[in-house]
Image (cartoon, rainbow, N blue to C red):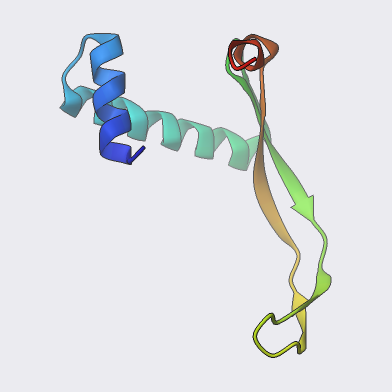
Length: 90
């Protein structure tokens, strides 16, 4: 599903315009980004929990050449779905 299709689906379910749906999606994205930068965790009941995970530096291999490369440490966003949401997919 493309972003445009998702925005359209959100608009249909919320009974709002696609333009307002796009604004809501961008607002959600910015809010999550701000919270994760400041506290590193955000729980949304019924949806799940967003957290920031620290990934250590490690060695990897270039698949094209087989040469060993150093993969730097980084922070990554993780999402764990709520039990309510997981139950809908069973």
